[in-house]
Amino acid sequence: MIELGAPAPGFGDRVEGVLLGAACGDALGVPYEFGSAPLAPGEVPRMIGGGLGPYAPGEWSDDTQMAVVVAQVAAEHGLRDEAALDRVVDGWVGWLRDGASDVGNQTRSVLAEVGAGGLTRPAHDARLASYSLHAQTGHTAGNGSLMRTAPVALAFLDDPAALAEQARAISGLTHADPLAGDACVLWCLAIRHAVLGGEVPDLGDLVGEVPSERRDQWAGWITDAERRMPSDFSPNGFVVTALQAAWSAVRHPVEMGSPTVGSLVAAVHAGNDTDTVAAIAGALLGAAHGASSLPEEWLAVVHGWPGLDAADLRLLAGRVAGRA
Image (cartoon, rainbow, N blue to C red; front, side):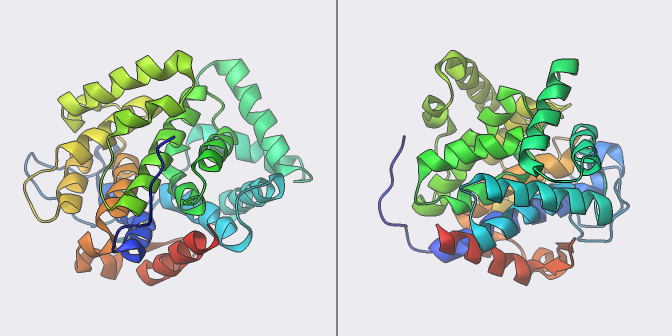
């Protein structure tokens, strides 16, 4: 496990950047998800809304909606025990009932089953539903847990071992495939490193934190992402290709503005599940470069369920990190 010393200067800005970077990436990618709006080569994407929602300009989608539930539980109770996981699942079920938009099929299936069961043991029931789905289909390695994972990193800045354990546990509430859990562990550890160190880490250095039987596989996937462009990893609904597209975008920004802006533009140009790839990339970029690396015009309009805006995400991120 990589250990870091005292946080580098700008710590608070980077804490806020985790949620804001993810939300801005989400809202930037929303209009172009699965070709909802055309995006010509070299064209700069804009927060014009539409997409699969349809969404208002600057509105984030299910990626950030689900992450907000995790962050709210983390801020109010922490994420260290089964009761916290119960609250997360309970929050997601309420979200599915009252405010969800553009929900992935796998997530909808699990949460609908849990909600129908009466919510007596939400986390336990979610795991059963998730693993039952995996047993039936063998295909539960979608990108739907990686897209919402950023708040877990903020909740365990002081404890990387617990971070890895809980990132995998929260992933498994809807995505039973071990690859989904691996991806969440790797990305959360990278976000933690970026928040504390003020730089994007070498993702390949973190593969030692996944089970030994999959380390070489992950090392190869990460190296492949570093050698190729984001659009080479489309379609990207699979958690591995989603991570590869996001990591490629981080490593291959287009030449414009800050590294955060350039990489988020590259993430959207990856195509396919544009909001999710950009949300994943945005969390790490915001962690490394801070909320101050995001354009003011984005921060002025980004918003979404449950009635939050950029200022609310700043406060929420600080509250989550403050419990760590």
